Length: 109
Image (cartoon, rainbow, N blue to C red; front, top):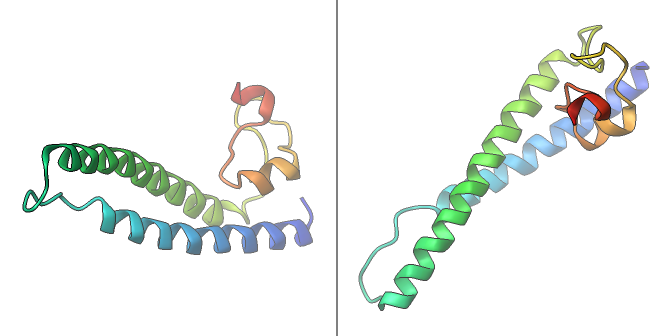
């Protein structure tokens, strides 16, 4: 990976970290416990279902955030960008799409 590619990837990771931080704050807000006052049974059930979906999205966002933070720490490591399974270089396009990727497409299957 070239220095220019590393810089591009760092910038992408930082931008994604900022976006995820905003998303996490919003998801934390909407996953607060649902109050029962002034709700009929259908509205309450709808709120509970939405809360479950949003809780799943929150967990996924937190996991991605952790993966991106780890990728940002490792990006200067000479072994960053190489598949942990086969040792081949992970294509730059894959790293742009998923900077936290630790495996090439073949090994990730």
